[in-house]
Length: 385
Image (cartoon, rainbow, N blue to C red; front, side, top):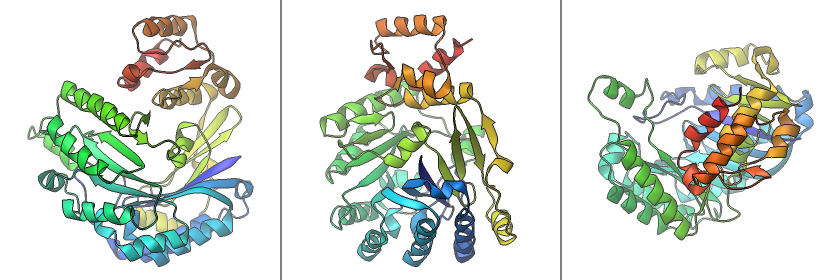
């Protein structure tokens, strides 16, 4: 069984206005965090999963580039010493303002094979509105460094669908990015989550979310433009040159087991047709105290068990966002899940509507269907009973 490892680095220079991930801005805790994280990783040394092949390692956040090379060296060594590593991909998320040539070369020396750069936009005013810590100039400089220091695998994040953003604004962002010929791009429609700074502005009536039709037109243009420039979509939000797709993210979509380390990190373990999912507390100090006390449960002590039906429905939701879709035989063999007559009839109808491809072996949405993937999956699952 292959295994992925995710390390959550919660530290950020400042809070982005749209972010609802767990993060802290007090970087005085970094050294204690790294000490505790090494303890948590090494606690799995005698667990049966330590004998499985770890093929992907992902440093996410937060902002992992807030860690020094020495910190990252300790963490990668802990993973290598604990697990049977056969890395095909090691990714580190980074912000443009943390990047310099020495840091990038140091990452390559540590075995980091893929960078994930959070640019979001090149518009100076929108960067301020998002409360990003970098400037447009820093983003351009960081992308230049990425393309000249040996990172042949990297991805860039963009956000579209912001209130007030026009399709012309998006075109400027995309064309500036394409000048760097990136091998991979992740483009996310802005979602305003409760509890974020933007969410509070919406609650107070100070901000109106973007019009759905405007966001849909931006997404449609984005898919066509990136496809014409050698970056076809392989998932609703992800575009890649052939062979440069994100391996770690595919672990999530394909239900490959993964272990998450650090405060707020999630883990998932497949067992036959069922699975287990658990998460660390989203509280840095409480998590450090637990690590210092040697409280290293093996996961199941705080896990939710998922049966075949739950996993099959989740797999459908994730797979139908991808260009590959899912084999009907996989639903049966891996999950014991069969489509009902109502679902079959609905799929036949959607084939006629141009939303689903006419394939007897797989369930695959068309490009038109993927524009409405989340809605279509909900409708498909509603007909399961």
